[in-house]
Amino acid sequence: MNQYLTEKQVKVLTTIRDFFLEQGNAPSLSELQQLLRINTKRGVVNHLEALEKKGYILRTSEPRGIRLVEEEEYQYMIGIPILGFANAGKPLAIAEEDRLGLLHVDKTLLTHKSDLFALIVSGDSMNRKIIDGKQMKDGSYIIVSKEAEIYNGDTVVAVLDNSATVKSYKKDEDMIILYPESDNPIHQPIYLDQYSNSLINGKVIKILERP
Image 1 (cartoon, rainbow, N blue to C red):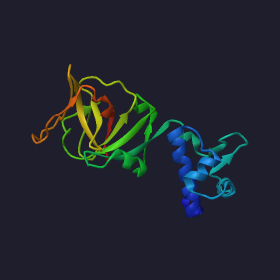
Image 2: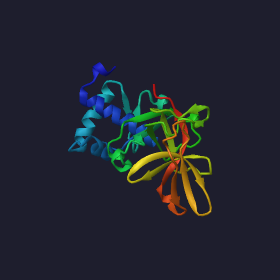
Image 3: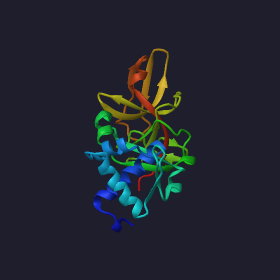
């Protein structure tokens, strides 16, 4: 269908779809104006009128009254931002500004459905780790929940020296141990002070194959 849209209209439609997947509702005119860097709301409305005329969206008088014609496809999906690579040395703060796109995941595949982000595993420090029958391989996607409870043996993402690392978690009386689960003996545990929970960015709840 994209051959019937201009390049700008494709960008507007993609922005609306991505926002819907992430937030569960449509963007407001002000949010679209900011996301698309359009000078005026009238400019946004012109694009919306064109998309509606071509049959891609419907508009109502309600707040956030933009509806995708194929909206049913998005009601059971979650859009999870890919923030970068784990163990690749790229700070999460930078990765959040330069997102690598969205993973579109069926809600039924996830135990947690909010405060999620995804990373791409780089390296073999966790290649013996299996979650729900899936092995954490180099290049796998991992889904991370910021709100999930963390227990000994869980796999976490920690931000150390401004970089994301994925390790298994163990808390003793006086320290936190982040340890690899790998068949490569070069990888060693990381020992943190017992009060270093602020460095833990979330719990890995899902591994997805990256074709």
